[in-house]
Amino acid sequence: MEIQALRVFPLFYDISEEELEIVREVAVERKFRKNNLIIFEDDVGNNLFIIKRGRVKISHISDEGSEAILAILGPRDFFGELAVIDGYGRSASVTSIDEVELIMFQRTDFLAIIEKIPKIAIALLKELAGRIRKSDTHIRSLSLLDAKGRVAATLIRLAEDIGRSKEGKVIIEEMPLQRDLASIAGTSRETISRVIKKFEEEGHCSISKNALQFDDFDRFKKLYS
Image (cartoon, rainbow, N blue to C red; front, side):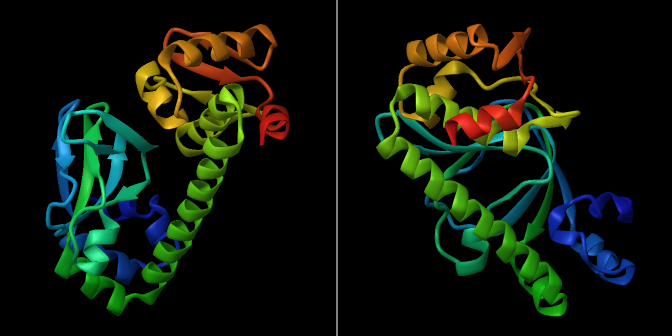
């Protein structure tokens, strides 16, 4: 792996070339096909993963097979950090939505890295704090908002997490399946379809093929945040 390929990931923004080389020496590249279960909930966690390409979903899967999706992550996001830090079982399952390329770190290697390079630990804490804030907002939306508000909050979260910005517009390419959106928003697939169509009629967004575009994302966010 080229050393500069690691520079694009938030955990490694602020470290030196020499420190990047230390990281590169223990980084392992992995690939998973679409719909592969990468992490099983409650399994012992020995690896941290950073997403280089593709998307994954974080979820709880019941004994009956029903799924509650907690988040969808894309390039530059990471997962598996909690079990790597505390040594307990995995807190959720992780499944590839697309073909994914990951950068993997063994637990012992990653813990050694953050001891040697405290800036990585600080970056990790900042990312985790951001996730807690998003989680709090999501829980609040599920408990306080109506169905339209929950769908809006879910689309805003997706746009911020995996959307691509350009001149005030935000595009969510390869939108998740409506059943997955329904799981995140705590509503039905039919409601997702109806509300997104309503947003489109109101001029907030447009859908082309499998992509959703906000023409004025800031305005939409102000209306529904």
